[in-house]
Length: 470
Image 1: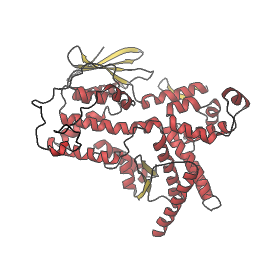
Image 2: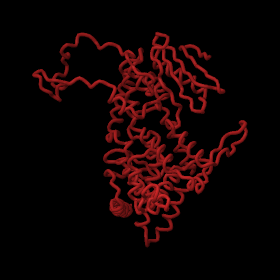
Image 3: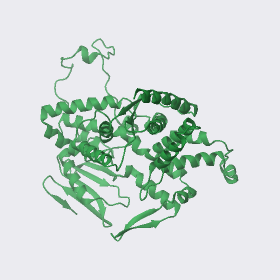
Image 4: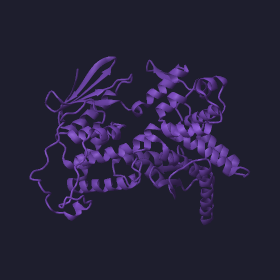
């Protein structure tokens, strides 16, 4: 075992050297080899040390069962922090772990340089551990069942946050008041020095939050309820904002899934070709790589699609046609430079919109299929523009319904009015009614949701005891 670790460390040094030679610039990465139980725990919780909830346990049980029966397998998990963390499965072969390390370096380079990760909290592992500790304190104080029931409600809407939160809130919110020492000078240790004292001028608790002069619609449902709910206690607002912060951490990964996996696959292929060239591992690597970037029947493989698009971009900018040279002024030989530019500035939506070509759609045999007459799945579209546009549409709001707060004082009774920005896909009404019950728990007043069903306008209502619609 010591020999295997030593060989893997030596290979990692060479992989890092090759990656840097190609122009990759990742954060430092700490690799750990862990058993399947640890790998699937991290995979189900998404971050190590996160707060406990039954939904994570359910995900863990499903993933671990699939692994035990040989139906699926996680080869690696990478955590977007600085330094980054890469977890390798102990049952991987030495070659598999080499490929995984090369793949992880591609991910970490992407995390570091893609614009959508610019606001990422690079110490999020520490942050979620603090969150977990605070939630445990609330469980001790208010009861585990009480906190769990509240988390059930919050997690039912956790995806409904604003991807542009940092841009909008930095602009819209007033700056926090400056903290001054008693001598008038700024003192970062004021809170410690005055611990236990009553702040000067504080004679009453701060007023309850009110919707105030808000600009509707507000897309960030979690943030809005946490700040303006008329019934939440301070510990509940704290829990909601912890969930909100954690979801903001995951947003860039949801925005760049295809690009991120394609970039990591593109680079693990090139790193491993150089590492394995002239060795008896080359054929095994080729087979493993082919299994990673092969198409999946009936579903989209993000590794495959992203990998093929990056390769196509490099080819087209290296060897532009005469028409492309004339129309776009491409001199040729700029493929590598172009993919680094794309890696830095695009998200999945713009990546597909700008670089998924007619030739690629035909080569990858992409198509749109739908359930016809509730009986069988049928291919309904193969025109490349429609295929591309459908892929882009499916990624709008990460595939979740687009719900906005359009009135936080509906009927002048602090009722909450939500609007579903209908884009052709109807809500699951049974699921929507259940979520309205959870939102009522958070808001404490009747909740209304405007949507469409059977091509007709529909408004769902829940008043805390019964559902209604019109």
